[in-house]
Length: 232
Image 1: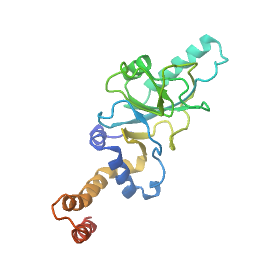
Image 2: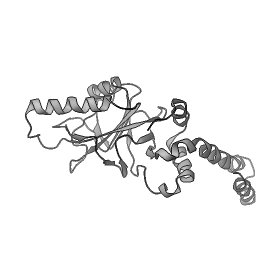
Image 3: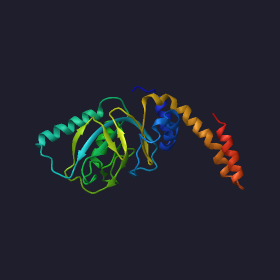
Image 4: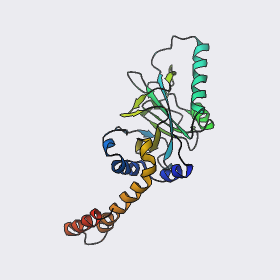
């Protein structure tokens, strides 16, 4: 997917709930799919939204891998090469396959530094994170939990379909994420999102303005809702 960088910057200026609202207009069939449905631990709640193209991977940490050390190292390097290639910016989506996701953390001081250096904007995972005071700045982490150990964490596979907190992601999908969660943006919806965002914002404005005025009432709400319905 090739997208004008100015459009990416524009979409990055809005929070993820706004993107979800706009997608309900341009892709109504996506109303109940394509977004995360469970809460995350967010490393930087005040950080602006991140937007990027998915790099996918799976990990395990509970059991010691049965591969030789050299082969594990080669797989890890191949994973980093995969992450660094292709369209950017990138967002890594990692599915922890352990029966108890988050038993061992893949994300801490070292891996956030590596991924940020490779041009990754952040990670979305059902696994755990650690080193909260030492993770790379401006590298967003949305994780299932926080834990102290990496245990036997290792990359199981990469570049395939993964599911994290109800959101299914494929390599190259466009993702928008912030402290609320994440959503995938269909390729055929990207160009239409700015207009939909503008429409959503204009429709909400009269209702919000009325609700914040002294003397707000059901009758004033009815009038404001009628005004919103006339906005196209």
